[in-house]
Amino acid sequence: MTTFRDALSAGPLVLDGGMSNELEAQGHDLSGALWSARLLRDDPDAIAAVHRAYFAAGAQVAITASYQATYDGFARLGISRTETTALLRRSVHLAREAAENAAGTVWVAASVGPYGAMLADGSEYRGGYGLTVAELTRFHRPRLEALAEAAPDVFAIETIPDLREAEAVLNALDGLGIPAWLSYSIRGTTTSAGQPLTEAFALARGSDAVVATGVNCAPAADTAPALALNTALPGVVYPNGGGVWDPGTRSWRGAQDEIADLAPSWLRAGAVLVGGCCRVGPAEIKELADRLAAAADG
Image (cartoon, rainbow, N blue to C red; front, side):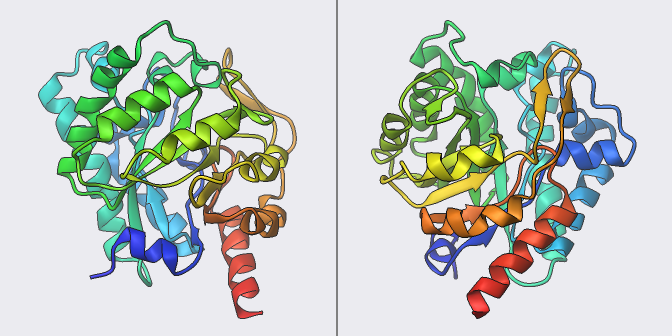
C-alpha cells in the first residue's frame, strides 16, 4: 500500500487552494470567530463541495476545514468537547468522502492552524502570544489526537508564526503515528515573529513525523526566496493569491497574483508540495496543476 511518504518521493503533489474564499463564493458569511470551521456544524455539504471542486481542478491533496477548529474556540460558543471532537473528525471524513470519488490517487491533510487562528485577530501573522511551549503543547495535543482518530493521511501544520509554537506542535505530534508537514507564516526571510527561517526549517529536522517544511499564507513573491533557505527537508509552499489581509474588516485588499508562474522556481528550490492558500481558487489550482503536468511531460 502506497503511503503519503511514498507519494512524496515520486514527485511533486498539487495541494488545493483556499477553503474560505470558495465558501464565500458560495454565499456563506464567514465573518464570525470560527470562520469556515462554523460550517462543519452548520453546513458540512458546503465544505464537501469545495473539496470536490479542488479535486476536479487537479488537486491531489485536500486540506480539511479544521484550521480554526479548536476546543477552546468552540467552547466560547457553547459547543461541548464531545461535539467538538465529532466536528474535528467530521472535517477529515468530509475530505475523505470527496477523495473517494476523485480521479487518481489523492490524499487528505488534516489542517492544524496556530493558536492565533483561534484568537481570530490576525495574530497568526505576529506570534508572541505570551504562552510557554508547554502551554502551547497542551493546546494543540487534544485537537491532534481527535484528528488522528479520523485517520488523515498527513497533518498540515500550517501558518505557524514562530519557533516557540513550532516546537510545541512538534512535541504534540509525538506518538500519533501520522506524518506531517510544517509550514510557517513569514515576513521575507524570517518567521512572522522575526526569527531566521534557517532556524525555523532546521527545527523540523529533529522530528521523525515531519516529511516537509516550508511556507504558506505568504505573499507569492516571497515564497521562492524563503523556500531556498530550506535545507532541512523537502519543501512545501502554498502562498496567498495576492493582496493584503485586513484583520479589522477580515477581508483582502489589492490585486491577485498568478501563482502558477512561480511553480518552476518552487521546484528548483526543492518543493514537493505546491498549492495555494487564501484567494486561490479552483481556477488557479487547475492552472498550477496543468503547468506541473506539462513540465513533467517535457
